[in-house]
Length: 103
Image (cartoon, rainbow, N blue to C red; front, side):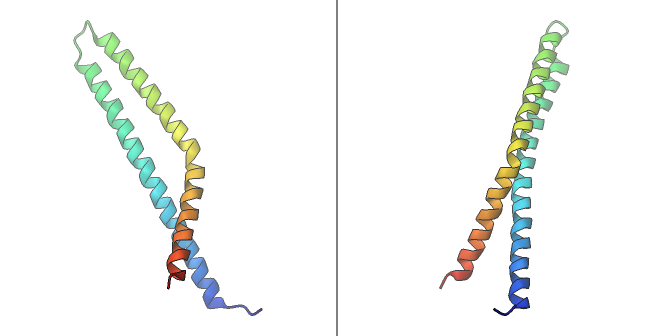
């Protein structure tokens, strides 16, 4: 069996490209989720600040609960990022291999 440096370089480049594409995909999903959570928390905090004095305590408590639940959702999503990244990487590599082998 002979070594083919060109094939090895092409395979390494495809692997690196799949890695970068997977990182971009998972990062994009994380940013979209974080932006949605941040908007929800900011809206709740703004409502608490605009609330009249009689309702400010309840509005602040509601805003704190929303922030707490947003943080919990973010932590749960972060736990799943490793497996999501692995699946995305394998799918990207598989798609690249399928395109290369197509007649």
